[in-house]
Length: 138
Image (cartoon, rainbow, N blue to C red):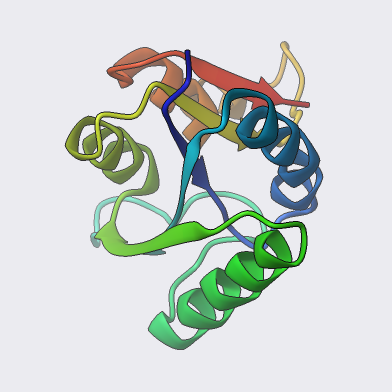
């Protein structure tokens, strides 16, 4: 059912918590796991994404991806890692299309329904533009 699973990660607690669900899904469906992290670029016109987990350094992204790959390897899952640069939501959707992902699993910041910045969250944008189903872990 889910042959290819894309797991976009950053340094957030929510991404770490979503890893347990990813492990269960990969094992249940014998899926291929692709871990993605995005070096975030910003233009002068747009502020960086809110939160402390924006990834703006290649070194941070490389270290994060390697740690995630090692963590999954410890539970018997061989993951492919992908590093890209750009706006996270759009890169996530582009990579999902490239690898023909059947599912994107990602953590949610849980900003709440009434907060104005919620509509601008990465997970909301991914849900809007994704070429495949998106599972958002609260």
